[in-house]
Image (cartoon, rainbow, N blue to C red; front, top):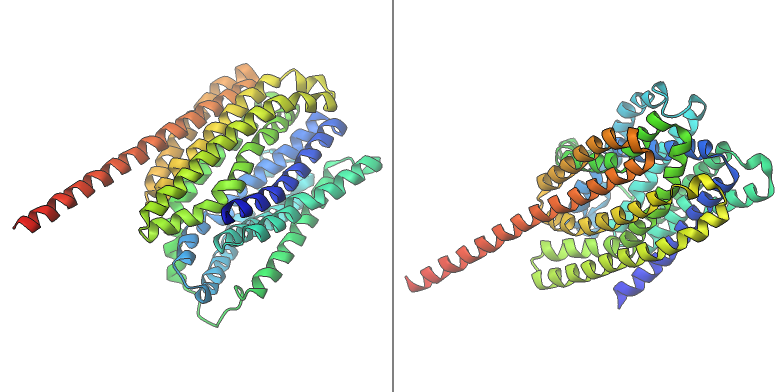
Length: 429
């Protein structure tokens, strides 16, 4: 009962947040040109990708470390992770000027880009930390401040004032929203004594060990995110900002499926599944996995069908033929999103068993094939080719992860049978 109550609260908060993004997307499509929407899409895509170079997926390592600790011993792990990120800022941030040198984003947005990148990264790590510490509701509250509240203010201003209908004003609202979210998160964590450090020296060997461990997840995540965002770079190169704008419009709406399923089920059940497996409570583990499977797959299909009917209403309101003429792209995206949700199930099974190399292998296989498909399909078929490239990538990702988890399960069953046979022989002897 508590799971469903928490899930409902989290879904409501995430729903309000997603509604704000949806409203912003609609107003951008209606009030800005497709090229302007495309530039904003490229800013968002580059921020989303570069976040992982700053974070290096260190949180994946530290999540397991924190869950192994008593509550009063967790603050030093949080402190050392912050130290690690500080070092990465000094190394990575100067290198990211390449984004502007090659022309992915115009130079006039350089300060917004860096401010958004740092703020979004700190907010993202804070959100993950709150989830790890089992505070999903406060996590979604600060997420709403970061990704939702400011949007309502920006949209209201865009509705009444013509001089606010530009990317500068939208990015300014984004910066302010992320800043407020980070400030609230700091006060909450501090009030719970998670940020009270006891003067222990920085554990540099632990940080190095964490970097080595998380590097596998980093490559897997970058591969996955490359598969998610590479399409926009191919589209920009071959077809320009306007096509990026149309594609980003549909992609952000379709992404609602994955976001809602993650918020309502995966985000809440993953820590419980990890804990049950670690404590060898296998009946509880299987029970939770079944709940996750039914909830995630059923939710994804329901959302995809609902979204498929609702998109026509959205397009009538936007009232631009350029978007309507590419509706087929959206149908393909919906199928891809359902496949990606299903792929999270074997991914979690591999994660709890520490089979990190299999996660990396499946991601590398999928992204390689996706890039190859984009190379051939985008030049010839434009954004529809990009959508089909992602569909194939999602299918390969799902199949490869199911193959690896099946292999692991078969190996575990064989080992269990051998242990039973040995136990029986010992009794006989």
